[in-house]
Length: 121
Length: 288
Image (tube, rainbow over all chains, first blue to last red; front, side):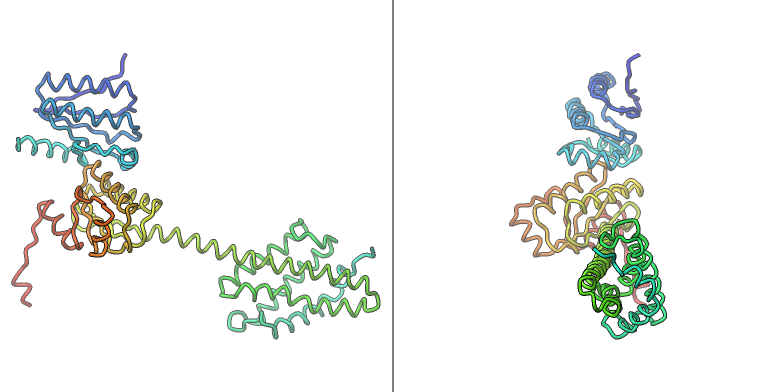
């Protein structure tokens, strides 16, 4: 059976929790699935929980940035939550500061951020 | 070459040599009455002489790194470290060994006064031997000092990067001293760890104690800010002195992406506003 990262719909938002080691193919598949799902359910926000992600490379970092940009084109905000310090340091050292991606410390803060930005729209 | 007289002589006259050596030490510069008393010195000298005589019996009178000399080196190392801690100078510690020369040389002259060749051989041997031992104490002394310096550097690294919680959700990082790459990494890691630990939304980086800010330091700061932002926390940089503000502009450092405040108080005020806190002065209490 093929590995897949589940996407959960909650109200107008989509929740993704990455609990496994990300490899390149999985990341690209997530990108496909997520963009498809956003159009399917007309989602207004995406929350990606990466608190279980211990290692990250430049490819995964770029995919996260791309997902966020694609979601914005489809009129959905992306919030990345729970990034580990080591991952943050790695991304900065790689020069990937993920401009345009919102981030929050934990899921509840992330949800609050999404709700706020939706009200502002 | 005739056999050296040293092993036999040292064994036979040990007590007299010790007595002479003690006299020598008490008048020489090596004696620090303020740091060590005569009783202790006598015990140390006796210990050393005992092991020294033992080692000399091995007939290996040139190589102090050989197994026979290990007990002597152990004792000297310990002695040198202890004296270093007490505040003896390396020269004073070395004098402890060097002052043994005179008593031994006197004995040699009495015993071999008529045989110039043997006398010269033994004098050369004992001089070289004691020189090596004396230098060894200096080496240990220096090593001890270097260990202390290394430990202090580590402590400074730890001490100078405390992350303080100012309020619920607000952290402060008062930076003191020059920022280099290794320190910035320590600072960055401890700040990010604390952000996760306390779930803080805002971190104030106070650079009042940083003497100079060049492009490298500014880059380190911006990296820290970027990493915190990735985790979902905002940073405020405070404590920028006028001089540093001028330097930064001249260097072309771009800090527009970060909130900056002149003082920590101003930064705290901004942080509290952002977190939705309001500070109200209690007039009734203030009048007392």
